[in-house]
Image (cartoon, rainbow, N blue to C red; front, side, top):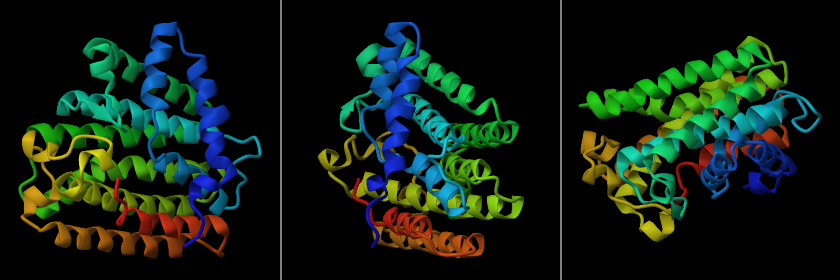
Length: 287
């Protein structure tokens, strides 16, 4: 397997100076403290990784002063904003091993922090109409997925897979498409990379469901058993698949992602190798 994507210099650029610079400019100071608590507490940063890798894989240089870093930071802020709301809905006390925002600051300030993160994100996308459209469409899908999870629970595997595509896959797709847009890729390659990333996102969500059933809270960095406790749909609960069978479904999505990646790439590169590794990683991760 190739070295971890976290060892790449652009991965550090997402946080420093990209992410930290944006958060340092948030006003008032109380809000800045809250958004920093949400955004700098850790996490795998898979979505901004997708943006940077896809930019490089399509022939761009994500560190050459173009929009790739801004897009990567923006998609991470959108993701973090959604996590704040998720934790309120789930009544989760922990996120990434740290106190959840609504516990640390209260429900009102946490919601304001989520709104602030979205505002900062769209400020980063606003200079590019295509990027703004991509993220706006992803947020519609994400919102529909969240509403479906709460109000129209899936009853079979097909409905669950559509939920996973909306709730998780859509923002993964947006992250990759943003990277391709930053590299001025053609529409065919933008779509192909989006398909790859959406499949990776669905595999990621399935694995997340399995870990909620099987992992220890200390290893996961957040409470486990939340799906059953909150009566939220997971692939294990909706389909009665065993964790091992659910992992097989995740592997199938990963394999489909790799097929889409093969159609999107014209040549091998280190970035493409990392994208292949990512599709493998999401189905074996332990946190």
